Image 1: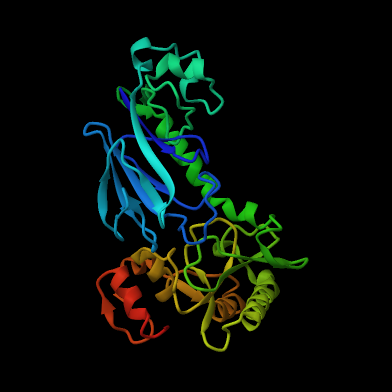
Image 2: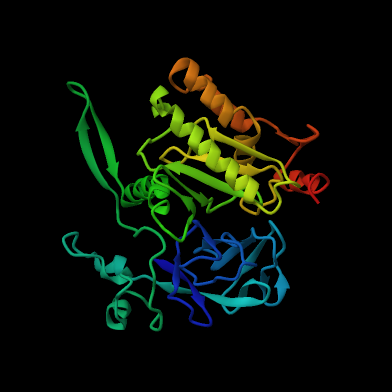
Amino acid sequence: MRICWLVSKDRRHQPIRLAHSTCVLIGRSPETKITDKKCSRHQVQLKADYNKGHVLVKQLGINPSNINSEDVGKDREVKLKPGQILHIVNQLYPYTIEFGENISDKKKLSSKRPHEDISPNSDSSTLNKYLKTDHLSPREHSPCNHKPERKKEKIKEGQTRTVVNSPEVTEKKDFQGMWKQGLKYSMQDPTCQVYKDDTVVAMKDKFPKARFHWLVLPWEPIPSPKAVRRDHLNLLQHMNDVGEKLVQESLDSKALKFRLGYHAIPSMSHLHLHVISQDFDSPSLKTKKHWNSFNTDYFMESQDVMKMVEQNGKITVKEGISEFLQMPLMCHVCQQQLSTIPQLKEHLKNHFP
């Protein structure tokens, strides 16, 4: 079976494995050790085709990515072949791809023994045991190609169903669970904090959807808006006050408008108040879902939430609220309807130069 590696020409980090027909995002991150602010966190999307022996490169970042000194172009896909050089951004950070043969499948390793060939700490002898690429020290970037375990599970008398216990599915679920809990870890990190007291902590959103985008979180472990009760009213007011303070202290508080509020169904665990400027000028704003989560009734104003809790003792969410995420894109300033996010962003420059 073939295998593909993304190799840093300047040896900034270990090679990254590109699984077949799987999208991998490469950009500014601890993994690539790229810290250049001109490089987006999601600068390029790579998709390896083991059958055709190339990698499709799609530029997602604003600044140019290049293959053999030719610009890829925003949102365009270009083939990267072995021997060609991909510069991640502005002719910097060169990479190549290398295809090899993973011959471990032929040896049928016992399931009782660990799969040695993809360990980050594997030495060259272990690597060469399974790969026909003798100079790479690989870093696994996708699940191993183990055969899923199939089990028979009894449902009713005389009926069974087959359950597939795939490492890929398990790893995906584990990753999603860790990602949803990310705020709980970030709020403890002093490098992320911009304000804290005995009740709340504030920090910059790691993937801001505007020029200014903060999160205000209580130290009290409140998982989501659904868990808020009347006893939390003073806490909600304090979170709002801290958000207003952040707005007042921002450099563009007079030039920009801000909104404070909560997502009806937040994607991240732990209650958090969004404090966001209304320019929405950010490379992290990429999808209709991103836009509509802040510009429809899916975004609940902080003041409205406090009134709701005061009157009803809890936060209630409208039935079918998730459908707002699929609404057509519409400018929040002039209500003009746009077809795509790039068109919307270009339109917003008229309102926020």
